[in-house]
Length: 280
Image 1 (cartoon, rainbow, N blue to C red):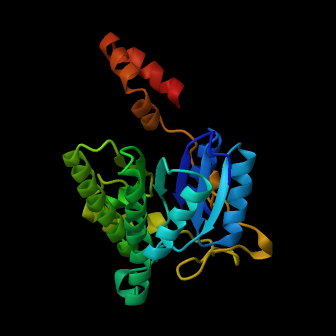
Image 2: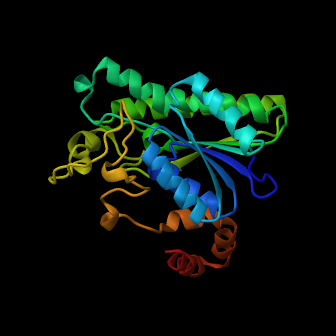
């Protein structure tokens, strides 16, 4: 039995790489006990090392989130070994990047099973445990593509739109019941935002998502099996476009400190401009 007297118990699905792994490490820095749920054993092992190095307590739980019974069993193990769940983060996803008429029904079924139903299964498992205690948080990883569909990603956009509607329904039910359990969506950035019109996406939506460079031979493919890397390594939290990524965004700073921004705005626009500059 792991020590249950320190930190919160947080479950992160899709923790073997990408946003899931980065989320697990961020939670570990606060001393949380983090259950790492995913299929890829190498990725999970790497995530566990990172969580431990960041000061958290990892628990590796291999699971395919498209399997509802397996997710339920994983939740049982988490509470048995780490303690009552405080936060459940649904992050796991899989996708196919292709025009709609080139995606097979089997691929659609698989992506929907992981990217949409995986969130449903995780939320079910979480609520069965946190609602009787009348406390806890369920966090859904949303996407701009859950508010605006773009070309080449119909299967992913459909799943993310479904998550939005499903989460909003559950949220209103919890409020109707007067529950202290919270459910929320966190919108991760994407290659597009909801304000672009159909004609723009039709013209630029393809080129904006493509590169002339070929995929490296070890590029991850994880639709039907885990994307465990060669030579026993995991792919980690970052992809191959780090040189083009931003580490800061003024909008996220403003969202976090909106009270201060409002006060500065009342004092005059120059103050707001100075604050935004510091937030960059």
